[in-house]
Amino acid sequence: MLRERPVLALLNGVAAVGSLGFALAAPADPGLVLPLGDGGATGTDLYARVYAARAVPLGAAVLYAATRRTAWHPAPLLVVAGLAQAGDALVGLGAGIPGMTVAGAAAVTVHLVSARALGRRPSVMPVAA
Image (cartoon, rainbow, N blue to C red; front, side):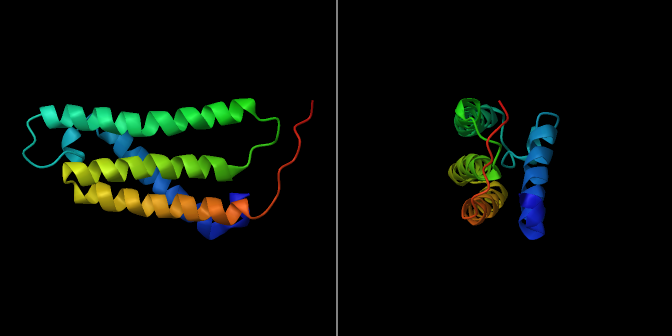
C-alpha cells in the first residue's frame, strides 16, 4: 500500500532509517543522543524513558496484529510508530535535547499524516483460512 504512494514511502523510510540508525549506534556511543557533559546517570534515566516510550505502543501493535483476521494494512503500524516517536520527542524535550525533540516531532508528523492518508482507502482483504 505504501508502494502506491512513493512520497509517503520515502518519508516513512527516511524516518525509520534515522530512528534505527540512532537505536543501533547509541549503545556503542551514548554521546550520540545524550546531552553534552552528561555523566551517565541522566543517560540511564533517558534510556529507561525511551524504552518505555517504545515498548508500550509497539506491544499494542503486536497485540493488534495478533488478534486480527485480515491482511496487514500499514496504517495501524504507522500510528504506533508515530506514538513511539512522540514519546521520543517528549523525552528529548524533557531532557533538553533539541535534535531528539525536532527529529521525533518530524517523524511523528510523517507517520501520522501517512496513516491518515492511507486509512482513507479501504483495502483490507481477508486472509485465506
